[in-house]
Length: 162
Ligand SMILES: [Zn+2]
Image 1: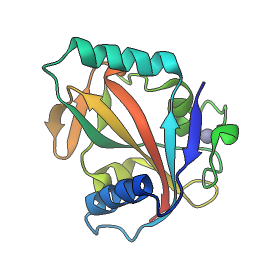
Image 2: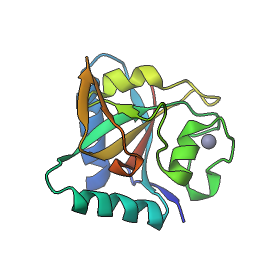
Image 3: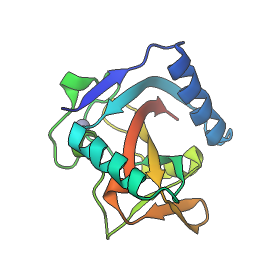
């Protein structure tokens, strides 16, 4: 089962994620964070990721940002509000993990870059994932990529304006 749990503002975990996101925006946008949501995808997806990581001890695991579009009111997202709309990419990732798009997934170590892939939704918010990736390869500019869905796991969703 998937869970989406808003972190308590001011908690250690909230502050850690907030400062990483803010620093990687590099002052390029005037952002306001509405919520930071801890994402736990269904167990079999987490297990596949852990097995992939264990079977590839030579590959680094690092955190990146992934911006994508959403279609629902996301500002107060929690486990009971994850939508089933096929065009809501954010809820799709939360429900079923990452799917390859043209046999790859793209992401960036720079939140300001991933910002360009988000949209402003019906409640005037944007949403960006923090993901763990095993064995990411550099593509170009600020982009990195990986060709295995199980190499990626979403950890947090940041809902913000900017
Ligand atoms: Zn949604």
